[in-house]
Length: 212
Image (tube, rainbow, N blue to C red; front, side, top):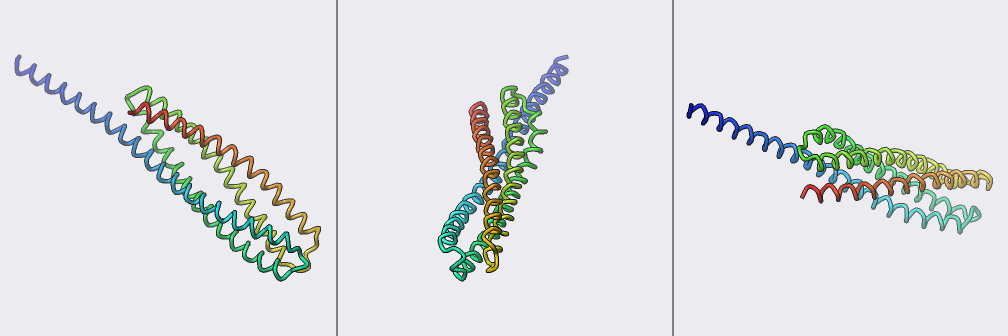
C-alpha cells in the first residue's frame, strides 16, 4: 500500500508539472505571437515614415507647379515628371506597408486560437479584447489602403495631364477636384485608423500590466 501511495503521489506530481508546463507553453506561444505582430507593426511604421517624407517632397513640387502655371510649360512638365516618379515610389512603399499589416493580421488570426488555452482568466479576457480591437483596426487599415491607392491613381493621372501641353484649364481643374475629394476621404479613413490605434495601444498596455 505504501508503494501504491508513492506511485499515486508521484503521478500527481507529474500531472501538476505537466499542467504547469502547459500553462507556461500557452503563455509563451501567445507572447511570441504578439512579439511577431509587433515586429510587423514596426515594419509598417518604417514604411509610413518613408511615405511621409515622399509626400512632403511631392507637396513642395506641387506648390512649385501651381506657382508656374501652364504658361511656363517646360518647367511644369519637368516637375510633373519628378512628381510622377515620387507617386510611383510611394506606391512601392505603401505596398510594403500593406504586406506588413497583412502579415500581422494573419498572426492575429493564429494567436486567437492560442489565447483560449491561457489559464489566467483576466489575462485571457484582456488578450481576447486586444485581439478584437486589433482585428477592427486592420479592417480600418484595409479601407485606408484602398483610399490611398485611389489617391495615388488620381495623382498619377493629374501629373500625366500636366505633361500635356494641350490640356485645358477645365480638364486640369476637374482632375484637381477629383484629387481633393479623394484626399478628404483619405483623411477620414486615416483619422479612424488613428483612433483604433490609440485604443489598441491602451489595451496592449493593460494586457502587459496584468501579465507582469
